[in-house]
Length: 327
Ligand code: AVJ
Image (tube, rainbow, N blue to C red):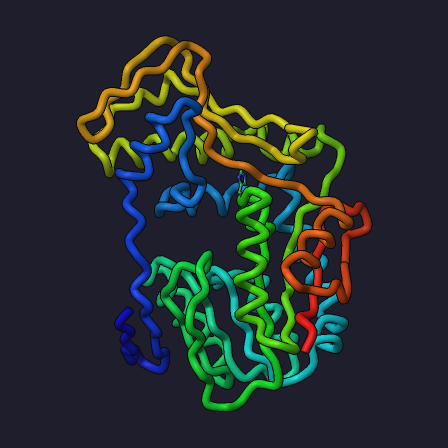
């Protein structure tokens, strides 16, 4: 694969040309399957990203504020355990508060390498971070982080790599996919490196039900926005008044499942293909797996990690875990 480095002010992009996952192909495959589904990665167009930001502020949606609060209180421990002069490799481009807190709290980090499939989002976020942290070398990589990718070499040699994957995004993946992703992170950590990961925990199902069915209806808007996006980008004609948001807790699979339910028998055109729905038929749009500490420990051990520390909030809603890749 050909690679390219472009200089953009003081931020150098390593563009590994991730294959443009074909939106229309994915959507049609998902909607013509016997169990209809759409990938949650398509939630985040401009409107979807704004709706997600609003979700993070909802009183019922505990993960974002809880993770940030844990980060605030344990950052000195993290810095101590991770040590100085690390290269931070973030899976996803975080211009968010958690990333800032991490970079500000570590001892003399040498570089920050955000990895994300959308080159535009990546560069916008990388420029913001570069302006805020002039002493850290910012080396964005445009790549699909679910597959192994090449890392850029910082000018200063880091003492170790710290892979960062906040937000419990790991929860969106099936167990097999999550294990595969942990293996990629294990590879990018290099021997002696670490993974710092946000993992949402199993809890009272009523707390979960409320977190994914908020009273203000923002999560419903966020879910329905996927259909709005398909209408706009794929010349489809979903009638948003005839689909409703639903999120349920699946105990045996230990996950929240988000769906859009058809309110009646109806047909929808998507990119020239007619899709029919029975009344009550649903489209699966997202899994959000919740782990207990032991289950996540088993999975990370299978990927080659050793658990170094697990930090939780006082109510044990959320965890931040530091995993070692042994030398
Ligand atoms: C960003 C994947 C962690 O699963 O809680 C929020 C997305 N979906 N409300 C989650 C989401 C519905 C969120 N993650």
